[in-house]
Image (cartoon, one colour):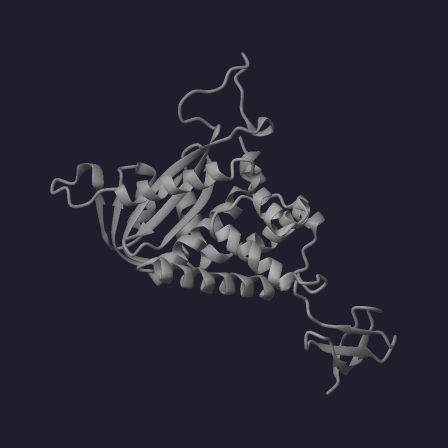
Amino acid sequence: MSKIQLCPKCGQQSILLKYGKTSNNTQRYKCKVCSKTFVLDQSPLKHMSNTDYMIKKVIGYMIDDVTLSVIARNLNLNIKTCHYYRHLIFHSLSDYQDEVILNGKILIDETFVSIREKQYKIIKSDGKNYRGLSFNQLCIITLVNLEGIVTAKVSSRAMALPIHYFNLFSINVKDPELFIHDGNPKQYQFMNSFECKKVNARKDPDEIYNTDYVDSFHSNIKRYFFKHAGFELKYIQHYLNFFVYRYNYLSKHKPKNISQQLDVKNLMINDLFNRVKKNSKIITYSNYLKDRGITDILESR
């Protein structure tokens, strides 16, 4: 069957005729205007050889928290190729946290990451750093429900404002039963927009609720960042998206032993690989280098 579409070779609107298939069983077309043949596969991996195997290997190593330099060495890949593969994986998860829905009992809290890159640090006129919780800290807001589903997003420099909670998490919270918080007044407007109970864990007279769960999650995030200490801070949300995806996938499947955990990780590899394949935007290494990440937050004052 023929179809009318813009030819990617000559750019003309043309009748495209089916013209056999590639060795990967992908449909090939021929343009009636320029007579060039091509495939309409817009996958970011379409121009690479043996990529399916390598991408799955890279995903597996990333799930096991292996650093990029070790991945490159073990797979005998150029480090730039590994950077590109990782960016494809990160890019496939760029909107993942919009899919996360939290309900039931939800813990809400923040953690902070130091801004150490000189171009983004705010220095006093005498050349000294600000002390304490200053604008040289990035705020990461985290929401966790008691089923182990999480979301974590960079909000701002220093303490997040009420508007950040609305902008970042209105899409994630649906029909909460209870908010468990630590008394941060910046959270109240967001929590009060829902008809549910709120408990300050620090003042709970019955000591039923606490923030240990979310504190443990923050510790896991910090260990993850420490493991990948060489990353550029502007990419921190990409790392968070991957961390949250991996954490939630394991939480949803609840493996009970090592054997089940391996099975779940294999399912995760296939799921993440399919996300990469569905990503229709062509991403080059040059595009990756131009990715601004959270530069707008880092450059804010």
